[in-house]
Length: 209
Image (cartoon, rainbow, N blue to C red; front, top):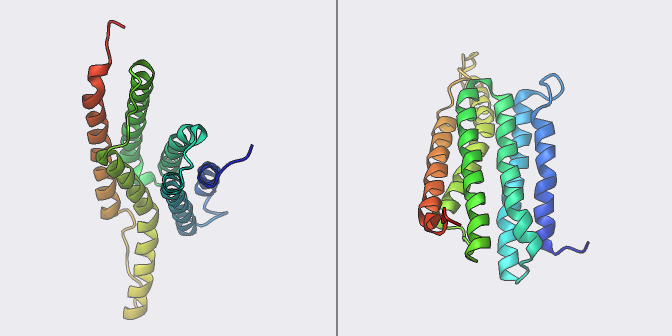
């Protein structure tokens, strides 16, 4: 099957998801924790960049296809949910927060996707992505990237501080304020954008049909 560039980028994004899962779930004796975090961050950011590029290229070159309309949102959801499963497995100190975050993301996507399907088939209305939805996506990308990168940044900071002071420093690796802040903001935006979609299109869901 011949594909244009945006569709190739979408397929690439899908292919990177299992690579991210494998790398993120390798035992520490095979791939050290901090190196694994760095590789996961690079892989995830690459998937996010392809998400941005394929849409821009498709719109600017008029390369929008039914394949792209179908696969692009699927690839987006696989990208985010797959990365969150890696975090759930890898970061025991974030497990409760990640379970809650993952449940919120999954239920939101199921609700909005179901609503899109019903409204588009029953009312012939296309539900376009709005600003809240875009902010939600960005907040998820930032939150996941922060989870992977904050331990690496902390380790590098510790090395620099020890090199400057000449002393071995104690370091609380379980204190990750940027991770908590970004994940909580991600949860807020996920819920807010989901409620906004439901509120805007609830009138098209007729319980008598």
